[in-house]
Length: 171
Image (cartoon, rainbow, N blue to C red; front, side, top):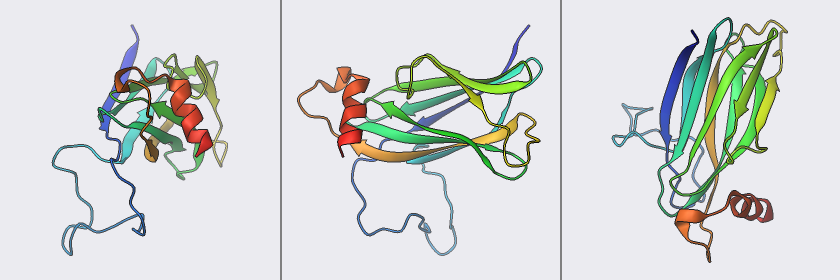
């Protein structure tokens, strides 16, 4: 029987463009890092993934905006040195969900997705060995909002991913 370590989180598209604002800000003098009371934001860290033996990890990223498309960067890092082992962009329409699975096969790690938000569909990408060539299948995932897009002339409930990709590439 296959075991799954599932991680689910919400990812909110940012409604505006922040100009002249530092990339990291303190909430106030006492609380330098905080969790949004609504549980959503423009950066997300999955604290752990593991793939090996019979274990795999499922990932889900949700664009909770009803009107904005979001391009987000997904970065996978190994746990020992935080070395980047893979990165790519995902393209989310309003109310869109991207899903993927990190799994082991023949001694290597892969990430697969049949979601059309992936850079290629279907996606079945090998994850590199890391900086020290001692990647043990344990790591974490970061997801950052890269660009928020308002695509005009198309119903927000049915924005094709090619429109999101083309709008992002044209900007």
